[in-house]
Each structure stands twice: as structure tokens, then as C-alpha cells.
Image (cartoon, rainbow, N blue to C red; front, side):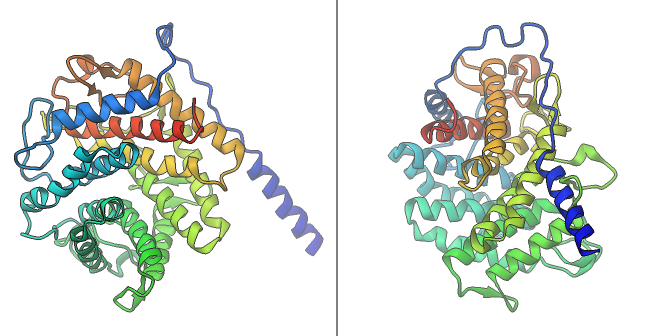
Length: 398
């Protein structure tokens, strides 16, 4: 029996290691005929500078929501991703204009927060996005205001844990006892925050758990309640694949990588690879091999939340590509995939005059898709260009 068990285990390992994925896409005739070799550093420079000039409000120190300067004053969560892009740009270029914007952001967006006069908000997922971005702003600039805000944000997030459905962070404070909309949107960012705070503040604890314990319990809740273990599918609703959104996969990857780096347990790296492989196989437009999320749309000017989801996936997908322990075959597949997405966005999904405007559909010109130029699409596209510049700088893409 032992011998048979060993043979069975080896067979499973061989099958798992030899899995083939269908990466053959059939683009429309001549879809890439006019594509050219892109200088990704230059593309990131023009994208980020254009987005900064178009969307950063130098008076209110918040991000405008549209290409033509409208501000949605109740919009809290996209601001965090705007801060992430400012940090990306500052780390890559060392340009003081981005550092100044990171400084100004703190008071500008805090005042914009409709829920309180602090960074506390009704929505745990929104506080999670800010918690992540504030920790990065602190690391990039050493602005100690972000040390205080990120500490408080994490404390408020831990208060959202409930035992319903075996645990997990609620979606919002007013959720009832049945855990309204509990899922990865709140738990993915929380798990990453917990792991990063354990690395930086190993003695910190909340509710009787240190940060590593928080990271593990949140991660385990996601793994056993919001993924299909056999396939790597990450879901919000088990019976509705339309809601298998990119950003949920992204933060799951991010949490898995953080826990792998802390513990050295290869199961976390394997988890990250498995969910990535599922997502880039099944949640793409098969005509182009480009990421797509159900529900991408103009959204009446302010943009639709879904338009930001791909960029969030790209942020954590890039960290996986960069990871030194990623198998070479996976890295090769992933770099080809991200490059294909970036080429389509830059050469088919971007209006370049009078300034950069990204489409929410990465293979369609924004003139064909929408006219508003919403912030969410701008941030998502800029994240992809910044990712490509980073990967190019490390010699991982051409």
C-alpha cells in the first residue's frame, strides 16, 4: 500500500507539473500589423506624466475623476490606487513632483473622506486599499504621518473580523450578522497588510493575534471559502463566473507571496502560481489574449469600479514575475502574457493626443469605447505601463 501511495503521489506531481495551458489566441485579421517595438520606459513616462497632469488636482490635492477635471467627492477607494501610482512613479524616477504629491495627498484625501475626519471609512475593503498604499508611501518617503494612518487603518480593519462563514473580514461596518458581501475584496488587502506589518512590526498584535497569525487566518479563510482548490479559480460567487474579477486574483497572489517569503512554505508559492494560471487562461478575451473583467463600462463619467480591477491584478502579477523562486517556464509564460496585454493597450487601447487617455477595454481605442476618460481606467492603464518599465529595467521583458 505504501508503494502504491508513493506511485500515486508521484503521478499527481507529474500531471501537475506538466499541465498545458491554451495560450493560442486568434486575433482579428491584421490586428497587430501596425504594432511596433515599444520603449516601455518612455511609455511609462508619458503615461504617468500625462495622468498626473490630467487627473491630479493641484488645488484640492485629490484625484479628478474624469479626463476633463470633474471630482467625485464621495469617491474614496480609487484615491488609494492613485497614491500607489504616485509611489510607483517616485520610486522609478526619483522625481520630486511625485514626492510632493505624496505629501499633499495625505491631507487632501483625508479631508475628502466622507465618513470621518480621519482615514476611517465605512468600507473595510476601501480601508484595506489605503492601508496598503499608505505603507508604501511611508517606505518611499519616510513621511511619518503615513506610519500613523497605516497603523490606525490596520486596527480598524481587524475589527471587521466575524465568525460567520468561518471567519473573514466583513465588507462594511453596517453589514448584518450574515456577512453581507464578505469576500476577497476586503480580505485580500487585509492579508497582505498583515504580512507586511509582521515583517515591519513583528511585535504588533490586535485582538490576541500577532500580524503573522492574522495573515494566515485571513489567507486560510480566502483559500477555503473563495477558491476552487482543484483548479485555482478565485471567485466572489460560486455559481457566477462573471464575478471572477481580476483584482481578487491579484490580492490573493500578493497575500500568497508575502506568506511564502515569511514562512518559506512552498504551498503559498504554488497557490499563487495555480490561481494565476487559471486566471490568465480563462478570464481573458480569447480573440486577443488580453485581460477582461465582466462589467467594464463608462459609468456615466465617473467611471465604473470594474475598470480599475485589471491594474490591481497587474500590480501583484508583476511581483510574481519578479520573484526569484518562480519557475522559469512560468516566468516565460507570464512575461509573454503581460507583454501582449501591454502591446494591445498601448497600440490599440490608448489615445495619445492631446494627452494619454486609456480605454477600459485594453484592445479598443477609447474613442470607440467611451469619451469620459475615467480615473479608474487611467490608473489601471498607468499601472500596466509602470509594471512594464519596471520589468524592462530588470531585464525581464524587452
